[in-house]
Image (cartoon, rainbow, N blue to C red; front, side, top):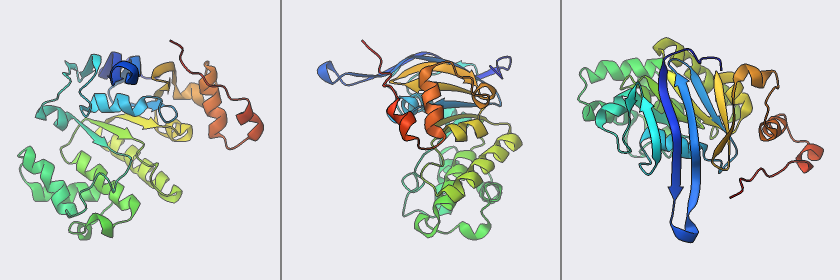
Length: 269
């Protein structure tokens, strides 16, 4: 793995998430383990329903119903997080419109976390973070409906960054955006990562996004990590597991003959 020697910012060991009881019981995440060295980007890849976003929700504290071990910056995490955790790690969601309060201005959206954490000099912090994400001061008193999708996602990224976290958890951060805007937002995230020395965990179904953004990745299918590899191996088209190879074929574009040969790698038992 490309960053294996670095100090681990995130460690996940035998993470399990189960929803429901009895006949409705779903083992959504099964014994998932990985580590993310500080300053790197780790990708969780798979189709819808593979469990990748469920892992991210457990990591972020949004879903407290999990078992196993999660450590962040060397500290073991309980299922319910304290306020200090959210200064360390923040999440950026898939749908920027759904994650922003429609009746709050950008100013109020950014002011809220500063007030909760009682951080000083909010004016300077808001101006600085808006500049960092490429939005000038005239965006400050606009409402979400007055912004484009890309601008809304920049506000969501600004909200995540305003507490100066060390980790961003990114749940398909560009999949709801127009293709023309996706590269802009990904490049913005890359620049911010370099400038701030951030550690990212990126959930995506898109292997080209992962190849652009990540150092290492875990491929998930039916709640299980089927393969973990460095992005360099992915770029050389050297995955070992047939499911990963299948994802690679799918990412190259629609090929009816190839799709007809796809298998369902459902976990048995």
